[in-house]
Picture 1 (cartoon, rainbow, N blue to C red):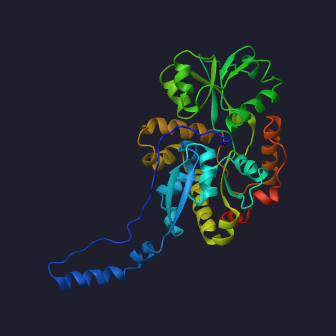
Picture 2 (cartoon, rainbow, N blue to C red):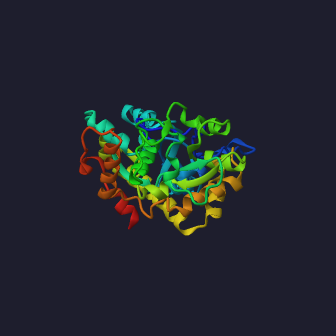
Picture 3 (tube, one colour):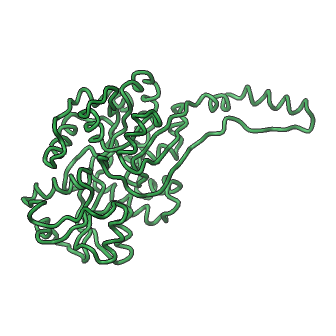
Length: 353
């Protein structure tokens, strides 16, 4: 997701705030003073007052990022002394702009965005410090069930695709090429529909297939308007789809915050590795009030079964180079960026210990 990358139109903008104290008023001024004094000496309340506010801009609000929401709902950020202000950027270009401008402390988006800004000459460039997802999060939806589907079935068809230069579209083309299919000559890919509108367009009769993120894919199935026939995450292999990043200067000046954020995220990763999709869905349900629990569970299960989430947050060099291979094949990369400049594994390694 990257914008150069695309944003999933799930409209949730959130702020998670912790109350630093409570207001106790006694029947007399002296009682009120005693209560106030007691509150001031309460270690728990003192701990809350010491939380550091960190603004995190996410590219989209999606069940695809379940470990992060587990960390929020289970209080792991507070355990690390962080009051998280979560803001939805609705696109990697907007998320990156927020980070570069200082509006956000940390960005969560496709790491190709960091490559683009680095190659454009940014001096205080953005560095990736924690990888969350290791597979693509979108699915190929057909108009009918196709239990024997192969990618060859797409030849001569019309597919509703993603924005040029966006990670979903580039991964889709990467899979096609892996299967001997020319994205430009062997099928027609419609890239003129806004990302958040492809499911609706498909439901209204446009295209033979559509590439959908959740909850679009499940919604089409629930409505009897489409059927998931392939997972791009499964067929593309392990790809560093999303990562957490911050400006070089912010990381250097705030190593304890970066470590705290990474620790909280690792706890979220540990949770999804040791719990069932049903348990994960129940924990993150408050993050998706517009979606019923059964649908959340279905989507979590789909991502769980395809091994979407890493056991740790370490962004390996092999994954970074694969990402650049995909960008090159898509014609979106003018020069390869150095892994050692754009990735630090220090914090993820510490969190994994």
